[in-house]
Length: 75
View 1 (cartoon, rainbow, N blue to C red):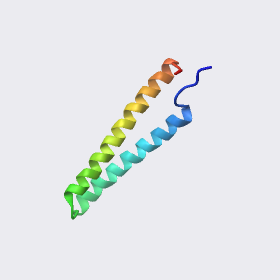
View 2: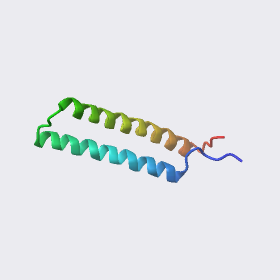
View 3: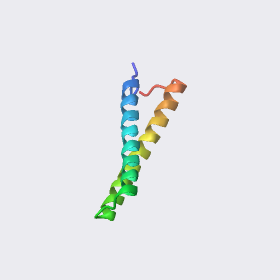
């Protein structure tokens, strides 16, 4: 019996994490407009990490959604 690698609940959790990443990115961008940070390099590293995290999650979610819509199962 084959089972999917990710369940629908797993996908929902990944989407939630992605949404948190988007929210944090937006909040950081708003904070940047309102105040100056002491260490711009540190802030850029954080934003870069958040961007990479959300980009990777976007890709995973897109692949899983496509597999789910196509009815594919993983063995």
